[in-house]
Length: 430
Image 1: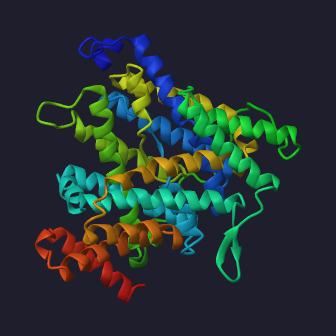
Image 2: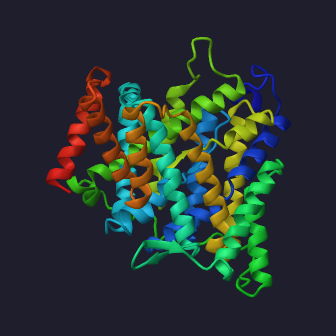
Image 3: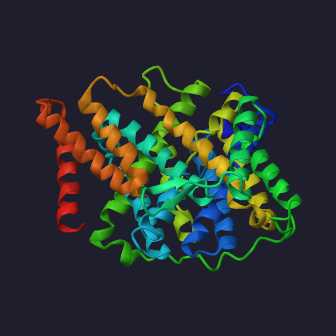
């Protein structure tokens, strides 16, 4: 049966290797089951329901990717997009979490439309490589600021806006410890390094009397508080245009980049450079996003952590299916997830920020027309607490810099159109 479903012999692999690869991938990305509920709960969503939705959305995405696309790529609610959902759309712009879920659902619908009508290549090519890298780095800086703010490492100040918190107090100190543990364990290639750092910090918090023991396992909580609660009518308002746009663009770039990186690592890329079964893979991502929004979580996307499973020998969808099964089993650990404090997950968030900021090394800093837009995105994404604002201002700066520098011929027509729409949105909508 497994041979018929996944063509294991064709890819020179076997069930044992694929399952071990799936376990490896799961251990590298399992931190999301702790981080996502804690982050989305700040919007007023029920943390237990989000926990179940996170596990179900991840499992659904992995199963579709595994059985349909037959690729060793795992999916789950994405870091960065969950932060934008919480701090940008709900807490920042004042929209309800139901409206935010509606925007996520719509971004998934548009993603499917783009894939079905072969427009995804146009969308991907519409964004200059410089801006793609800038957006990733901007999201990394955004995540870092959130982690630093939530744990008191960075605090507000009436004169300077922000200031350094008291690093000797318990929460900031534990957040620093969590980050140091992640770096040390990841550098030593310890399996499940991020998750182990989160659990270790939580245990220390328990010993110190800061964490209350609520149990390890139980029956999965009810998903009713978030199930089918998305508000599509509110999400269709013109004021939500940039939000849907941001969810779509970031997911599109993230997914495309991940598919290419993982496929290359697995040796699956064809001689012409194309990723095999790209269509089903992109459809897996978009349908998982829609499913996740319907049951109550932010955008579900492909995880670059899948490269860990590929390095362990994963070559087929059986790896992804294994990850999906483990996410389903994770639903029985809701009490453990509720015990995890913000400072325990701060290390994981800062670690993801480090990985995202890595793209800055690929920027041509000698070309001011390239460096200036990157700087705008990098600074204004975290400082406005909005990925949408970062993308908007980055596009406008990029176009203005090229035009005023006499390099307007470098601008594709799509860049002109997108920049004009975003500028009009700022002028007439705000």
